[in-house]
Length: 228
Image 1: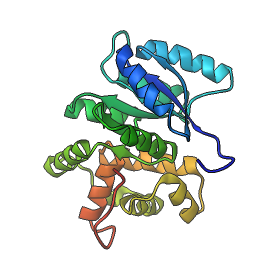
Image 2 (image 1 turned 90 degrees about the vertical axis):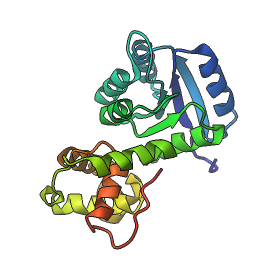
Image 3 (image 1 turned 180 degrees about the vertical axis):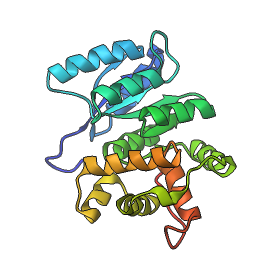
Image 4 (image 1 turned 45 degrees about the horizontal axis):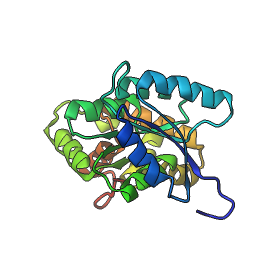
């Protein structure tokens, strides 16, 4: 961790206690990550996050299981992004189902990891989310690329504004929000707003799909490098 920098605060949501203990155990050994707590379902997570907000110690990133009782991870992700848009969410699950992947990303998740990910991969996903980047399991990234190729419902790229095209070009180059903001002279939140608008207008669900489309449509001169 950079001297003087604050650790990334992480909150974990999973309905299996053994999974929570395992993830928490290895993240607690990572210098730049601080575990704030855990919950066993989406409803419990919202209650505890509200308490953390009131105490002035909200998490930066939530690791979110998708299949849980009472409130599942997709509904909980949508609720978190609605109440606290500054909190990033990384979906953490044991399966790849296209509807779940798309559902989590539409709800606002910035990453999607399988539970067999290594400790280093989970930590990398947390850091990526904190920095405004998308981190996807390689198998998930491939599925998104394939679904984009198969889709005939992608809206024309011409409807984007000039600034949205600028943002999309930089996304296709694999640049995170903070770097895009610096390059364009705008705020991080403005970049996020543009990215959300781009995805909505084009009928896409992730930055990876947007980057693939930008390369396919010739908005960048060479192969793009979307963050994975």
